[in-house]
Amino acid sequence: MIWLGGAVAGPRTVEEYASQIDLAATLLARMGIDHSDFAYSKDIFDPSLPKFGYYVFNEGFGVTSAAGDVVWDRAMPAACEGADTTLLDAGRTLLQTTHVDLGLRENTHI
Image (spheres, rainbow, N blue to C red):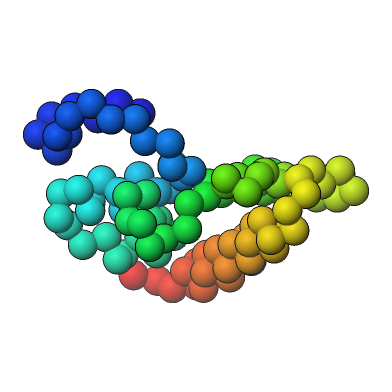
């Protein structure tokens, strides 16, 4: 991603682990706008937050961080890659949390 304009103080390379879902909180925080409505997005420049990328695909998920990478695919559960069980647990937790959250939203009519 390339950022240009007044929010950029000077040339900089950011090597934080993140995913596309983190763009909302990161960009809104740079503009001083509340981003609490984006519950799953995190400001990648906030040093107090964990640095990882999380993604999902048909019947699976992946998590990547400085600790390593893990990919879980329902079609091939024995083919789970990555040695860090902490990342595997984090991915499972995120998948379950978002699944429950989306299920609750589906039943809410606005």
